[in-house]
Image 1: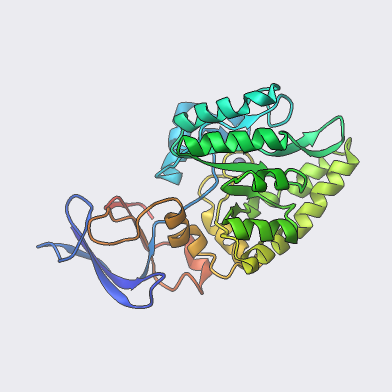
Image 2: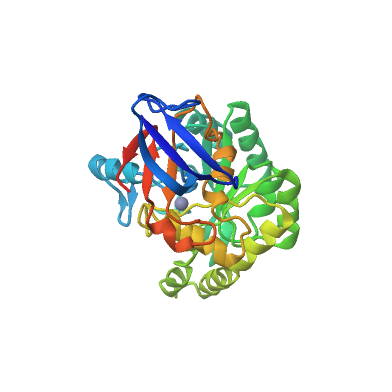
Length: 329
Ligand SMILES: [Zn+2]
């Protein structure tokens, strides 16, 4: 039983939040409740919209390691496994098929295996062509995304370059991951459709290293360097055009789990007008998670100064409540 007093973002007013013994927010203080904080900034629980529990720098990890990663990332909304073609993604991670017409059926399977999301690999290096190239024909993408929507799932896709984007966006995809190849025309189409973008800027920082290790493919390497150079500009243009842009780290792989504060700061540096909301209230609403109000479990992070203006404080939460329970800050 707890009481928290502070400014509840994104509002501007000081409120008192009361948590009962089951962890639910309630209207009235509970007898004997402990005042956990008096005068902080209260933020609806943070969201990392792109991370991979079960993956580490060397690929799939054992269950114990995955369990530790899940504790860092806490409450998880899962897509099923990635869908890709052979030799067109990191080996061993995706469900792969070279019979592209099977994609709608595979999407339906993964929709049933996840929590309302399906993840496609939209582009990857085509070693024959020596550059990034789309994996799927446009008509297959339309059928696949229709199949996901019919199953009640939303679809997102890994896309670095430009060529795979028109087919995915016009097929009605719900979100683009990375999106470093977005042009103004494609950004306008996303804004019109309400397609979201999760740019994973701290992962895009690894692009020059990817380019360095791909010297055999100079066109691809140059392409990756150019995409890296333009990544912040894409985020700025997308937010200006009204594309919903959310925070995701791409943890699992080259990026350690739990770096959402770094991604919030990267979005701020790129000119995102509301980077904290992109990792909290806005992302929660997009993912169907409730705002804090009586009757919902208390899922809150508290800071001693205003995290919208003091981005450094994001590394030092005063306390975290997860489903009404205190977890180590
Ligand atoms: Zn990823």
